[in-house]
Amino acid sequence: MVNVIRDIVKRYDVDALHFDDYFYPYRIAGVEFPDQKTYAAYGAGLDRSEWRRSNVDSIIVKLHRGIRQENPHCKFGISPFGVWRNKDMDSLGSDTKAGQTNYDDLYADILLWLKEGYIDYVVPQLYWEHGHRAAPYEVLVDWWSRHSYGKHCYVGLGIYKAGTNTRWRDRNIIPMQIQDARSYPTVQGQVYFSSRSFFKNPNGWSDSLQQNYYKYPALIPPMPWIDSIPPVPPVINSISTGRQQLSINASYIDTEKRLRQFAIYTFSSLEDTDISSRVPLKLIPAAGSDSLHYVLALSLLPQDGNELYIGLTAVDINNVESELSILQKLERADEKATWEMVK
Image (cartoon, rainbow, N blue to C red):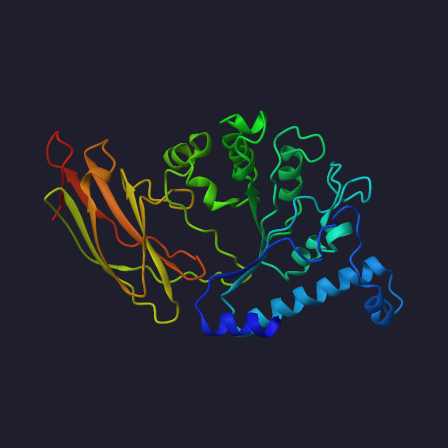
């Protein structure tokens, strides 16, 4: 398996390798995994549970090393079952009563991998609702926010459960979970299972999430342990207006770093150009090109005020963003919200 993964990240330009929650299989009707003979031959005096966890740990370490050696920019992440351990088994565990856990039943010590830097991000499958009797969402999102050890945490939400019971017929349940996740600075986003569910627009979420919670483009947070050096800013060659369109031409001249995308920002004044917490107006994929030729409808520009400044940044393949490029000024031409470039 390790050689297959090495081959994938060497030959293909993949952003990340992502593994689901199957390490040792979930118990079915209490049936134990049949590894008695292998354990007897290779257990080397370890407790059986410790031996199983050691087997999984060794695979994760080999995968981590193989990915880094073949492609240092490729991320490695895991989407584990939502409960690491229950608190009654370990004081470090969550205040839950899950019937099976990562550590004790799947033999996956997710926290070890995060602490040692074997994985770059974790996507815990928090597919339960608030107040669930065994695994409350609010308890687990708080627990994972405190146990990602500086790596990224993207909360897994179970949109597939829409309509399965009274709680999951409530259209507010996913918005509540998003709000909870966003209240923790150590949670970088959400991931949904599964994309197929969105085709049916359950509880109207396909529309409402797009129009509200995910209305604006978002930059993927960089992983500084992989790369923290920003690319050089793009060079704005020209910006022009005409026929209700804004045409932007820019170049990216950094020979050291590969480009992922350009980010367009707008500002109402030169006194407010801090982009550290600002949402881009638009993200434009680089698509293998070091230049930007983009046409934006003027109607997409902010409609308040009489002055507008436009700037660009470059975002490299590790999601590290450059400083803001030189700002270009537009002024409102008339009351119909048309803008013209200031020469």
